[in-house]
Length: 326
Image (cartoon, rainbow, N blue to C red; front, top):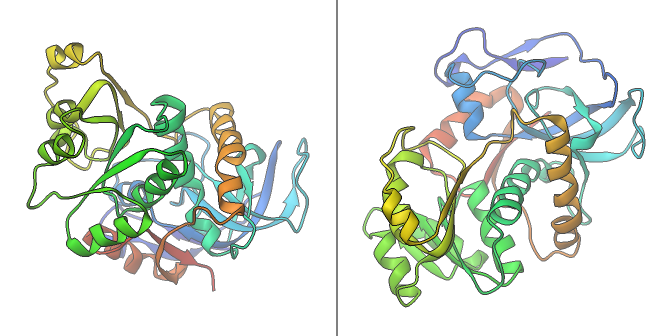
């Protein structure tokens, strides 16, 4: 098969479409012929040499894909050759074939084509696990999403609205904010021109956000705590704004607030399977019914993954950038 390899870390040009050995499904795994993968920030970090795959994972980038099952390994039940699926991966999505633990498979939702299904696994698992399983967003509460026009952000808006929450978002352009509003966002903050702490408090009569989904890390840590409501929960899922910040524990104590920080890639298979099962139970019915949808900015050939990485690094996209096997 062919896959995107990284002979040497570097810029987008470091991604090379090379012929490599086919994967073989092991115990509890299936083999998927990939239709499409999706670009995530973690892929960019891996390309730069900062985020190696966990032990035993595929060396190729790609944390999600869609495709058809072509082989079923020993110990697998509930899936068969020919099933159309999408999958959460620890790596290997930038390839024509990938071996996937059966617990990380999801069926393609009704009414959604196979390629666009590649936009779902990482965002649905990240949002559901952080916003709902850990931070317990409830109906009537306010969720603040940083990077509202990203793949994660566009899904977080829709899921929060589906459960009856109010949604605030930050984004860097009026066009991105407009797209967030189309998905249901109630409070729109241009972070280049406005202070999200002030805007969120103003829109919530001074209360603040009950849950914050943060991709920035250190840069926003202090202001996120300021923006939290009493009993608020801050869920950190990224470090785009740095890894070390100063935390005002007094402010955190005064609000009886909580901070969590998670990633999906290196979790044990059992934890990933539990998250995928929860997503299938709670999110998939919303997709099947058409109440929520993946937001796809563009589709590019997988062999031109470098162009896709440039798009994501320039942050000019809304939603997901897909890599299609052609």
